[in-house]
Image (cartoon, rainbow, N blue to C red; front, side, top):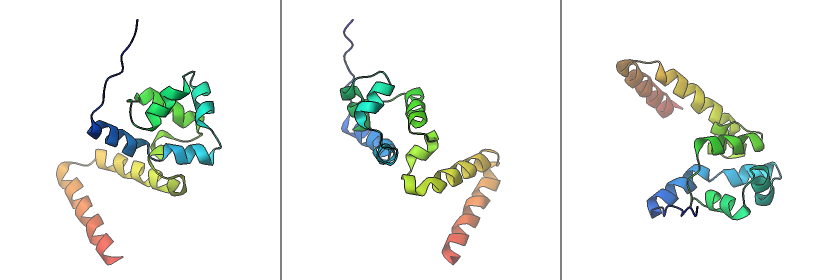
Length: 119
């Protein structure tokens, strides 16, 4: 069966590119080419290129697999490799935020903004 790719809107492509903007930096850091990534994923190189350029949606499981191949955590791929610690901080903050009731969350955000102004 011939599967036709869904045409993405310019907004969807921009969002995909924004999400994947650091994957190429991770590939460079790990010395992994697009061809090798495609081979490791059992995909064609043009398909991987479409992902990396935001022209085709990537599933969460595919994103997780790419992180594995790049020896990184999925959340780390959302940041430049030089900012690896930032991913850890965001994950810790998200975990804290999940457990706060709405009032406590608002107080936490206000405290964070106040601290940012002082430093």
